[in-house]
Length: 257
Image (cartoon, rainbow, N blue to C red; front, side, top):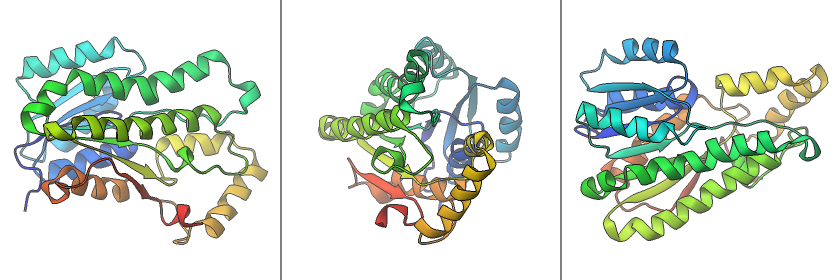
């Protein structure tokens, strides 16, 4: 059964990690895709891989930290003649820097990509969502509510907390129009960004983090992008038609303790 047949999903941060896993899972369920990513060459490779599915596919190279990218995305979607039914606001940045060392530029980068981008992009396609009684999935993080040793996260946690508040407020406002808005709060997932963050740790911090995974995750492992993608399919589909305003931990049990 194709749960997303005849739907068109726009996915930011779609060229790798969680975003690409969501794109692949959506395509397998019959969804047409608008895939947004910064790296044009990486997008081209993803486009080639996704063409195995019988779907319409538009790839747009754009830096979502710049508000100027939104009008260009809208222009290309309209040129392609597509209407957006589902938005997955996945693009984001996570830099674990002590509060005292987080300068204005780094704070702005987190705010622009993690908060402003989902806000502006969703607003830009609001009429599409109203027409299709569509839905929005925001990708948050457990760092909105839980902190970890050796991972100073003031800027990141600030923005993910804001994203979750945005999710609830938008769900409340748009529910009467038939639009559902939910968020997924993953635990640590094996993505290129996580691998990059781990590479910045010194050996002692990396060893402590690896040991900590065994003790604080009941399932004793970090997640895979497909773990988030599979739940995203459910949330985007009619199987979740009475679910809105939810913040769903998909985290291997991390937030149970």
